[in-house]
Amino acid sequence: MSTAVVVGNPKPASRTLAAASYLARELSGAEPDVVVDLASLGADLLDWSSSSVAALVEQVGAAELVVVASPTYKGTYTGLLKLFLDRFAGGTGLRGVAVPLMLGASPAHALAPELSLRPVLTELGATVPGRGLFILDSGHDDPAAYAPWLAATRPAVTALLTGRPVSA
Image 1 (cartoon, rainbow, N blue to C red):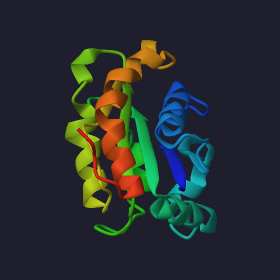
Image 2: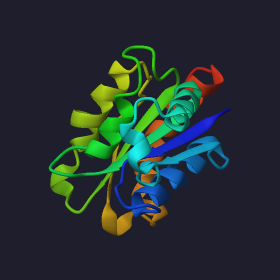
Image 3: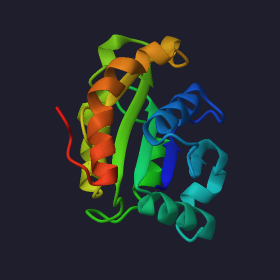
């Protein structure tokens, strides 16, 4: 199984990256094959002729599992992440299972993954099982913060990735 992580935090090597990588490992059982820390791409992200960004788009689009993560800014995902997602062709750009993950400072933004990121991922062709995941910044490194979501959603992710039905 190929797994990718895409992180739209403007700070490289962020808590968002740590959270997304943890989630990818939990869902796939292995380190992600592709990690795209968008902050490290610099001006290439704005250059539509960039072959390095085009290669990353192809790798992410072909991944069977993609964790797409962003900090919550003004109730939604970052413009940095939007720049990258704009590279995908509508309806066919993402061909696998995608998990929307957002981190924020307040539970007031808990619906942000569902209201802003999930619709974009489905529009780009991904299958998004379960609800999007919101984690408080303060708990990004606490496995207990992820446990309820993983218990509810991991069976559906596993079923989609293996082609086996979800058991009750």
